[in-house]
Length: 226
Image 1 (cartoon, rainbow, N blue to C red):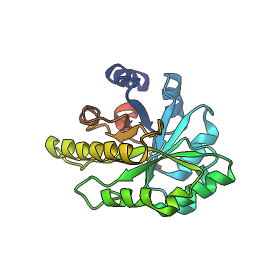
Image 2 (cartoon, helix red, strand yellow):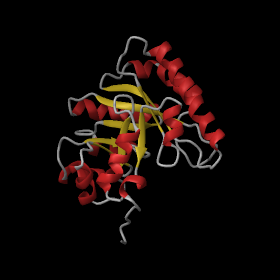
Image 3 (spheres, rainbow, N blue to C red):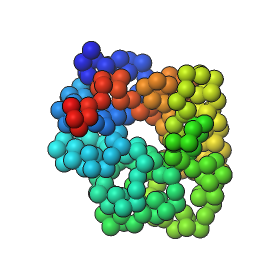
Image 4 (tube, rainbow, N blue to C red):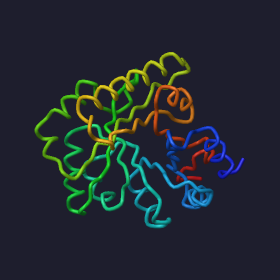
C-alpha cells in the first residue's frame, strides 16, 4: 500500500478530534515525508536533531515537527527556532536549556515530560516521583518560555498485552493526578502521548491523545546505506 493509503487507514480508525497522529519519519527521506504531507498529514516526529533540521529546511513550513527521541542539551539550540513540541523532556536540566533557547528565539516551546513506564533498562524518562519533584521545584516555577502540555511514555517491548495495558493505565492515572494537582486551570495540559505501531490500539483505549506511528505508514525504515 502507498503512504497515502496507509495514512487513510489510520485516519479512518482514529478519532481526529480525540487522538492526534504523529507520523514518525525518522530515517525516511524528504520525498517520503512530502508524499505524506500531500496526503494531508501535517504532524511529523523525528528522533535525530540533525535529520530533523535538514528536513525542516527542505520541506513546507506549515509542518508541525515533534522531537520524540532523547535530546541532548547541546542540541536544543538547533531546533528551538521552529520545533512545535518536544515530547521527550526527561530532566529539569534539559527543560531549563529549552527555556533558555526558547527565550533567545522569543518563543514559548510546548513540551511533554517523558515518564519511564517500561520494564526495560534501555528507555529514557523520569520516574513518577521525579515528575512530581520537578513540578514542585522552585526552578521549574521560574521557567517562562516552556509550557508543559502533557506526558509521554513508551511501553515495554513485549507481546504481553496485559503488561502493556497496565503500563499505559499507570501513566494515565499519573496524568490525571498531575492535571488535578498542578494544571487544574490550564486548558493546555491535555496531551498524553502513548502508543506506537505495535500497541497504539491499546494506548488509545487507555486514554492516549497522541500516537506515534512510523513503519506502518512509511514501510521499512531507510538507512544511510540504502
